[in-house]
Image: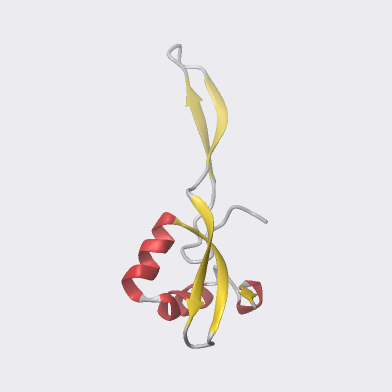
Length: 86
C-alpha cells in the first residue's frame, strides 16, 4: 500500500538533506500517515481509512460523509478502495 492519504491526497515528497558544507543528498519527507477505524453512520458499518493528521482534522471539521464524498469527487480514493470491517 502506498503512502497516500485517502482523504486529502497528500503523499511523500522528495527533497534534499543539506549538510553544513552544502552537500546535497536525496531524502524523502514522509507524512504523518496512520490507519484509523471510523463508524460510517450512512452505511451502518465500520470502515478503515489510511489518513494523515490533516485528514483527521478535516473529518472532525466537516464530517465523515462529506469528507469521503469530497475525496471521491477529487479522485483521492475510490469507494472500492475503502475497507469495510464486518
